[in-house]
Image (tube, rainbow, N blue to C red; front, side, top):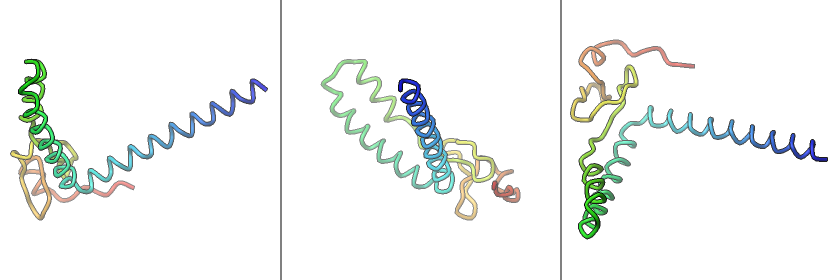
Length: 114
């Protein structure tokens, strides 16, 4: 009976790990497909951090330093050609897409992964 319970628990853990990996891959693909949504979410998080920084004025110096660091963070975008993330201020925009450099903006689109 103990062996049966062991194998059932092991099967459950394997299925849970596979589902977790698949969900993470789907989220990553979704972010790669639409980096603007990611940027909007980061902007919302930054606004929340600013509100937290306002509350941190009454807190310790360490908490104030952490809140200031979060508020200073810059939005990151993914290159439509190579997928590398870079600061939004350095983006080269062409045809509604963001690229990390002028060379990638001029280069033909990479083949779609299947």
